[in-house]
Length: 254
Ligand SMILES: Nc1ncnc2c1ncn2[C@@H]1O[C@H](COP(=O)(O)OP(=O)(O)OP(=O)(O)O)[C@@H](O)[C@H]1O
Ligand SMILES: [Mg+2]
Image (cartoon, rainbow, N blue to C red):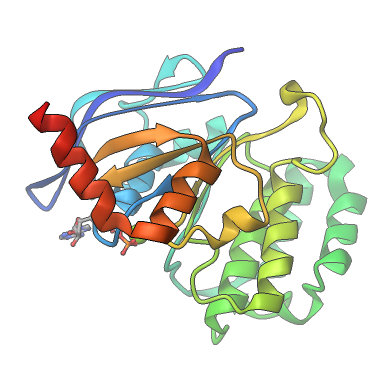
């Protein structure tokens, strides 16, 4: 199986300060990985660096997408390759309605017109279609709208930054369903038919709804450990991220 994402020795600076230090991460095509880690550990920074936001400057290392180095590509070129994101705190986009985003998606893929209509109805997005993107939406509604835009545009590789934060229990069911649909987790049995993704979460709630193949714990700008998501999450829920930090210190002393 090919790797959809391969990151090697990545260092990223924000406003002159190094946030990510020699970070390595590999995601095979069709796999969904979870990125856990305490507040401020650098999860969002990693996502922003992969998608190519100009404020996140790569000072060292490589990011390969589907085998090609994308470091020199700008954010638009990376999006065109099929890298899609839902942001932790997305901005309001005045003057652009959700319906216009859907029209754009249909213009690019006319064969998906009926499917997109059905998705609107399945996820009850009708009330949001004529509103400006994220304008006046509640925290939970913004998460739904972000995921819906990804569903409409169907990028090849999706990264979701805290899709579960600030979402109540009932809305979590919908967010879980949307994510499973987006990653083709429910109906694609063969790994090759599944979509690859990176789900960032510090609470891990979303992992009660969406199966992840592998989890990574980020600590202070690098990946501290990787493994089975259920085992890692159980440990974090029992002992907190503090234990990850202690475990990491013990490992370095050996
Ligand atoms: N634009 C910026 N200017 C200054 N510091 C920044 C900027 N963006 C990120 N940082 C710093 O980088 C560190 C990592 O932030 P980041 O948002 O990546 O963490 P996170 O793991 O996503 O945290 P959370 O779980 O709270 O979302 C933090 O200390 C943060 O203050
Ligand atoms: Mg974050």
